[in-house]
Structure formats: structure tokens, C-alpha cells
Image 1 (cartoon, rainbow, N blue to C red):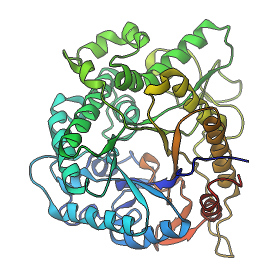
Image 2 (image 1 turned 90 degrees about the vertical axis):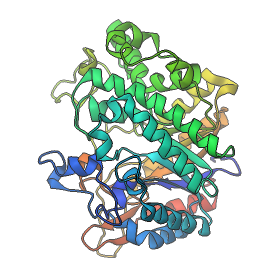
Image 3 (image 1 turned 45 degrees about the vertical axis):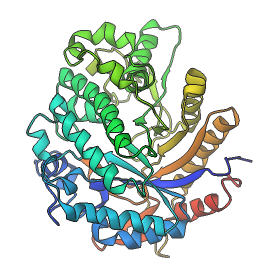
Image 4 (image 1 turned 180 degrees about the vertical axis):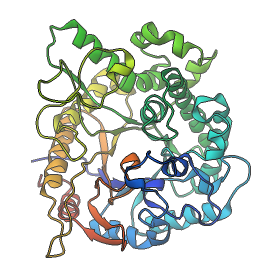
Length: 457
């Protein structure tokens, strides 16, 4: 029997660009993802976020679905360019008004909101000025953070400045498969450092407006598991990959430094971005730690008969393979439910009393289960995915990890970035032509889990 704390937050998550649509409505300015979508060959099938789930117009009925499922928490993100079309300066009050209506509706449904300020949709005007690769981004993000806290901090009490800064740096600027599509390792290191500074400055700015806000990072994390612990090349590669994806931000926020293995290898590329006082600033108070978890990474030799997996290891000069073994999801990702609990326990053991409460701010799976002839969606594989990951969390809690909530990714099928509408992560099925929503069997199952606080897993 799984045991969860009495006030455990059972939630779901979305992001603005992936569901809102209405990209040309009420004065919203273009973001880098609008530009990326409109660049031929960047997004599968030429898909765009122009309509997406039309959540901008359908948010009330979508929140009604959240209430039907029994969600206790909802993680959403603001569209920066909906409130500041050029990213700074001129305000668009119709954008602020939309989020007033959204937040009020969420609260009226008895659901606690947690808001992300930046989920990858940078205003294009700021990108034209250098974007995340320039320190010029810091002041606009600081001002935006203060404006958000001032307008919404009376009702929203939990904020995270930047979703998955590793993705911002490495997928957006290292290998360029995400907007803005830049492929340059030195630039990616600068972006990584600037996300650290931006997080700290955002937290400062929001707390200067309201001292009662709870603010923490949301980091996409994974364990790097070697095939052979006696192979020094594999062990080194796993330590390097762990430092780049996990410890870079954890060490910065909790210890005010970057991992030595990174500074030894990449100091020349990273050092140019670091100014005096930066790392002292980075060590900012975290009221919680958000972990986004999907799978662990295998580190080992190539697997005979398989094409090398899409990996960043060669980008870092590492001569290893990360092709996963075993059953894969529709994303080609392995199933490693035990890894989620292992991560929570790792940070509990490493930071002890310094570790704030952990929230699993994203966890989910892509399976292409469609509406059947009975009008239902029998997504049994998703149910099993969620169940095993929740059991992993429960085991970690039993061993002392301070996990306080779980936000399933995603509430609804949505625009899945460079993959367009090909992959479905939602517990609510969306027909993107008619905008009809259908609760999948996983949503109905999750409703029961919430009602019983996880006891029947």
C-alpha cells in the first residue's frame, strides 16, 4: 500500500504556447516559437501553435475538466509576449486580464495554481536583441517578474521563474532542435549561465514585491546509469553528463558554484560569461525544488543492430552511446520508473536539511491511444506508467525524501514543440480539428487515485 502525506498535492501541468493558441489575439506579440514554427522544416508537418488547444477561449471548460478529475493543483505558464509584446516596456493589459480570469477560475474550482514565468516562448523582440545568449536579457526578465508578482501575487503563491533551463540552453542553443534553433556549444554555455542569473534575479524581484511568495527552480533531471562500472570511460561520461544536466543548476542554486568537472573541461567556453559576483548571486533561497522526470539515460557502448540514439554526448566530446534498452514509449524513451524515486532520494541524502520540499512538476508519457468506437480512450499503458512512477515516489517518501506533490504532464494532448501534434501526453484527449475533449481512462483512474490520496496504487 502506497502512503502519501495528508496534504500531498495531486495536480497536472500545461504550458502557454502548447495550449493557448490565439497567437495573434488581443495584442500578443510574436515569440521565438512563432518564428520557429513559421520556418520551413523546423516543426513536424509544418504544425504551429496558432490554434493549439484554443485554451485562450476554452479555459473555463478546461478548468471544469480539472475540477471533474479532482485536481488539487494546476501548474501553468504565462506567455511573456501576451503581457509585454516586445518583452519589455509597453504593457498589454488585455494579456494581464486573461491571466486574471484564468487564475480566478482555477481558484474558484478549489485548485491551487503554481505559475511558471518562462516556458520557452521568449518574445521575438528580445531574441532580436541577443535573447538568452546576452546579459541584456536579465533586466527585462527581472522587470517582467516584478510585474507578474505585483499583478498576480495576491492569488498565486508559488512561482517558478524558468522551466527546464537545460532545455533552453542545450536544445535551443546547443543543437538547435528547439527555438531559436542555434547550434553553438559556447553560446549554449552562456545561455546556461544566464538562466542561473535570471532565476536568481527573478526570485529577488518577486520577493521584493511580495515577501509571502514561494519560489523555486524547475529542472529536468535524469540518472545516468553506466553499463560497466569498471569502465573508466563510461564512468567519466556519466559523471560529466550528470554534471551538465543535473549538478550545473543544483550546485549553482544550493552551493553558489559550478561542478569542478565542468570547469576543468569547459572553463574556456564558460568562463567568458561569468562576471564577478555572479555565483554569489546564484545561491538564492529555494522554497521548493521542482523536478521534471521522464527517463534515465543509459551510458555504455553502442548496441549491435541499433542506430545510435539521439544524444548530446558527442556534443560534449564524450565517446559513449546512450541508446536505451527495453520497451520504449512513443517518444522512443525508455521506461525507468525507479529513477524518479532514486533522484528524490539522491538530493535528500546530498543536501539533508538544506533541501526544501520537492514537487514532481512534470512526469508523463506519450502514447497514441485514440478515441474508440465506444467514445472512450483505453490508455492502459499510461495508467501503468503513472502508477509505477507514483509507487517510486511513495517509496522515496517512506525513506525520507520530502516530496509534497505530483503534477502529471500533461493535462491535455497539446502542441509538442518540434514534434507538432504527433505525440500525445495528455490524460485528456483533444481532437485538434473540433477541439472536443475526452477524458481518457487514465484521467478517470487518476481521479480515483486523488480521491484516495494514492492508497490504492
